[in-house]
View (cartoon, rainbow, N blue to C red):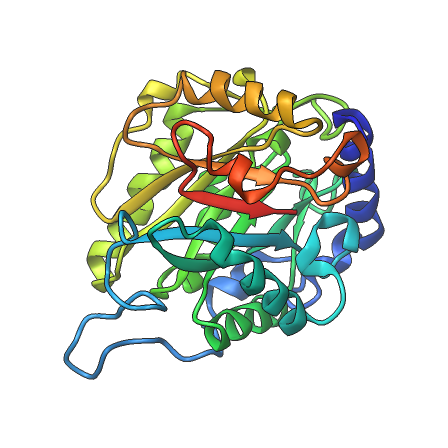
Length: 313
């Protein structure tokens, strides 16, 4: 499957979901901002600062992130939307050790929480939100397996910073981060799926700065901020993205297809990535396999630099 057909499949799945994805939020971001996650906050004790799910307060270099992506909206959106959630996490954990390479594994559930689609929606932003009950379910599953939850954001015409702030009540938790998907960030007059979206280093930096403030205010462990990139034009003026205390910046290179093409995309995009940004690599169970064998862990870990986040969709 090429990039265009994959995008059509994803938009079709999202469109079938439509604004029903907001059912728990009643179509309003205010409903979420006034609420709190039902899963309890994790901490070392009454007096101690909260810890990461598998201990400590810093991600790298102790851990390597390894995860699955998806949404219950449709199996087309990734492995985490297929079948029983705990079974999928169990399958993920079975694969994880192949990527350890001298580090501890920090499992990741990347839930597509802000979902792009091809319809305007009530506010003209071409996106909707999964209900808070869905996020609660995924956060509870993450905690059962001592994993991080990353809220994946496909913003449509909304801004990344507004969408990140929409999920603030969850981002105050010590085990919840974000994954920004600028392929789906379009401008006024553009429709997702008809054009490739893009973002800027400034927009990413705005999100990182906000997350850093949350970390400081709530004494949180390091918080992960992933941003996905399919090709160079998707992130412009990337040098405006700066390091921020308490925020771990990770770029996931999302090339699709044959191993040689994916490696070439990784090399090209990584070469233009700021030094403070950690590198990640994404594999697609179906799309990659249509053009040849799925890359083996040894092939993925032979990439230079070695990915510190490996994600399957």
